[in-house]
Length: 413
Image 1 (spheres, rainbow, N blue to C red):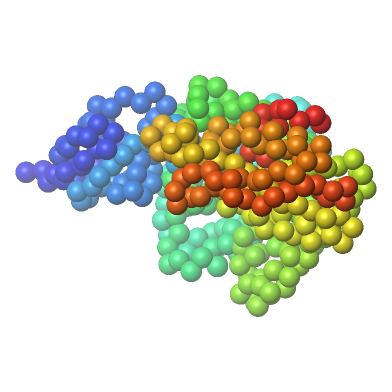
Image 2 (cartoon, rainbow, N blue to C red; image 1 turned 180 degrees about the horizontal axis):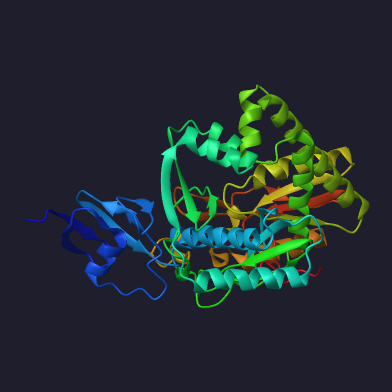
């Protein structure tokens, strides 16, 4: 009698018995699920696994598609491998570095010992499509870390060698795509035919790998021009090369050798230097009256604000800080997200009319009473500090939506 195990599927809230040792794809088929952009991978007891993962015990399983963040990451990792394989096929002595997430894609440094041309990009695209059309298996292997290190050393991939030497793991998972071998941290697709959509185009001196939109996986994410963001990444890369910490393996090795304090001190000095340069730029533009600082939650906006304020003081400018968090509407008026929870990251969680009214008053030279948001009661209280701008003041505003044009729609540029 064939042994069976019980699988509870979170997608349809059903439980089935399947043969012990079934793959996740077998389980998906057994449940007769239909996912337009999946399955890509699955969460097994909340741990993401590839569809070739075999189950030997009762499990909770949730299948993931491209609408999920984990599913999209699996898709992108597999797309990276197809790209690297394609470049390896055309230029056997080349090196590919998946470098910078930018422009709603990934900038890749393609080192083929000469300038990358549009013709090269087209050749790579065609080879990637050939690999996908061939429906090649992406095979998962597990070896002792020592064996994996020796394998990558023979392949001349010292970056992987340094990384694996510092993981502290007894075993390492790696992947093969015909003759191409690589290491990826996380689940992968099981077959290249699962890749339905991608794009490649010339981008600066390399290649931009474009990916499906998480909102509509049937089309590519919109290209966003982020030249300034790209230049910031490139600047940091130049300093990484000077410090000799181009990869995670380099960083781990530096820490192991006792250079962690040096890395921290140099990083702090570089940051302070850049903030000083920003302050000088602001000081040289006499007409600047407001500085807007935006970024995701917990990204360091408030800390950056304080450090910029110190540097502005050294330039003879008196900064006045305002946090957009104090302009939240009352909790009962806060928009809700798809789960029914209060969405404090929505632009409309802010009292935009009050903000514009007070900013205009400040720029006229009037005194205003700033609001203060009470997170315990969920109410906006007019108990903030009184504020009036003088000729030597600059207003510094920080918040998630600080750079959103709709936030300061009534204020002239």
